[in-house]
Length: 124
Image (cartoon, rainbow, N blue to C red; front, side, top):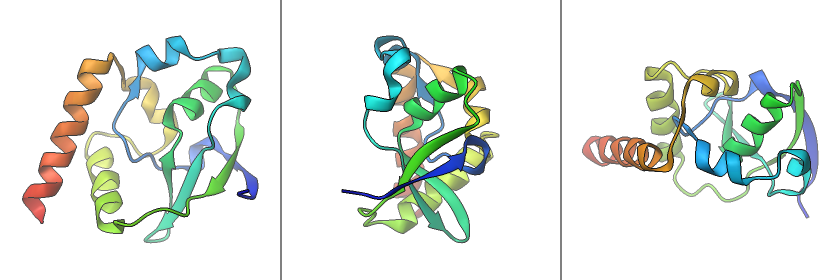
């Protein structure tokens, strides 16, 4: 079991340039605590959100300032996550609070993810 700790929402740099509005609407907003863990990692001195973007977004919608997170144990490709951070920052996403301007339908999210992945492959 992963040890959880509390972080302020604005301390986390997202690694995906969107939140999926369809996932948000299908989740139980009253019961977000029972959903999967939020995972973070420190990369180049920055606190990076690896997993749980929609859960963090829901917490923000509920006006929470803090949320329980745990350290991510399964990052194999740090260079990929560095690229994701750079991509998000190029889109004006510097904290999870910025995701409020980047809530899209699933098909748009898939396009954004593909674009980010293609740019990563071109850099390799």
